[in-house]
Image (tube, rainbow, N blue to C red; front, side, top):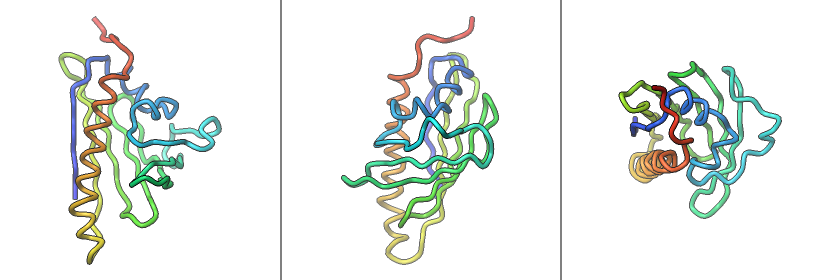
Length: 151
């Protein structure tokens, strides 16, 4: 299953990339992020770097483990997430030049599980993921440093 969302953001691509890939900024735009334990000691720059995020899901806190696979400034970030009781998920973030800033495209892919869990994955999880992507883009429109376009 592949879910995508994109939006053109009116800031310089490099500025947007640096803001979005800095974990210190994630609480400002990442929906339902509660905490990043150990943030000051962690790195998110090289393949293999990991983060554990505490998220709010259905009214309760859950942990989400992330592993960075690729970070190619200023164009691409790929990482994987694992969360107990959910399918492992691949994430891609594309930063593509646009006439008025950059197009930020978010892609989330996962293999639905079998049985009733798969029904959940293909319906509620798909809906919740698409909603989270839209909310992320909405939050970024409000939070990105303004105006940072090169002349």
